Length: 129
Length: 132
Image 1 (cartoon, each protein chain N blue to C red):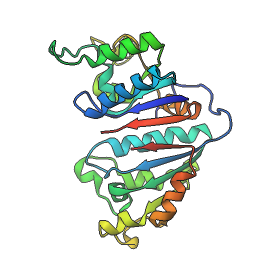
Image 2: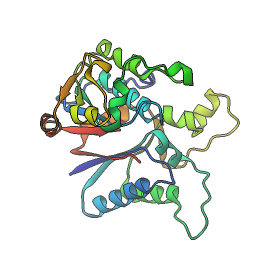
Image 3: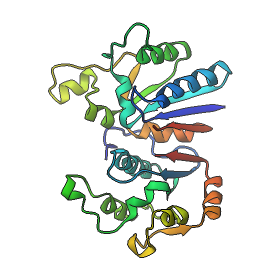
């Protein structure tokens, strides 16, 4: 079965952890994960800068590792990212910001990517709060 | 709207039945507004799109919202513009309205009120639910 995930929650929410666990479970059972779309506060998960203590989960690294193993599309909503200061090099130049911080393995794109993922998938699972 | 940057395909296979389920009060978080952004973006993709207001989402429908007083965009005004995007299938949960003491004359007229049983049927008819 083809799944996509929509994640709206930030790093502090249990639901973003559940999203990862769900992604891991479905992939390890042989299902496909078409795309993970980070929207609203979910956009914070695209920052390369969080530095959690060593005995806590590095959420960004975890998604990156999963994406690398299974070749998953990790998309941050560009409007949600811009509002929250999650920029790639191109957007940093466009908005004349001195820095950019989008983590490797993530891309910034539009809401059309959520629509397309929904239409192309058998199931869209939302992790909201 | 943020569609301008993506000139990719607007039609993908046969239209699917997509129901946006809105459970958020209009101004406690930007999620209600973000949901409407997602709906407007989806309207460009020629899907069979409808919206259901459930739980605290029914507060979005109340007339005479004065969002300007708290420097917010008026959600009700955005909702009233949905027909311009060919979005006309709007439903509200009767039980959610009743639980919150919201009378039918306090909300927009262009919306179909559904009892829980009919709402369940609507939900079960969809290809996908997009929950906010």
